[in-house]
Image (cartoon, rainbow, N blue to C red):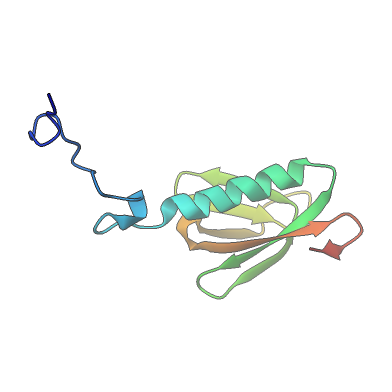
Length: 104
């Protein structure tokens, strides 16, 4: 017996491809995912720094440290202190800079 047509057994998200398809959805997950990928790459031996391209048009070049605090992200282009503060959802693109300054 197929009960999928009954409201008690059907999902309210049926037919929705991804959370971004929901009305009023914001791409917060995309920015957080990009920052996670950048942070992960910075932990590897192959990546020296990252360039973060923000939706506002700002580019944070050669970031060597990243930190998330809820909806706010921080980046630093030097070893001590934090040089940039921006919303997580503002991150649009991440470019990895390989060891020796190679831009991939």
